[in-house]
Image (cartoon, rainbow, N blue to C red; front, side):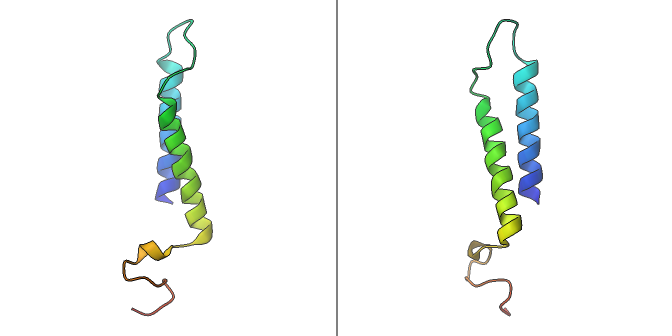
Length: 69
């Protein structure tokens, strides 16, 4: 859930910065869109992890949460 919330916050903050920081007559072509894209990727991965559940990388020894430790 943390990835989803952080990703949404990044998209909102960078999006606001793009809109507010733009000079009159200036287009929306700026590298700050990378921040929006990063937020979108984080949100997408967070939603995927919420649906798919924890992965094998969550436990360095391998295995899943269903196995007794």
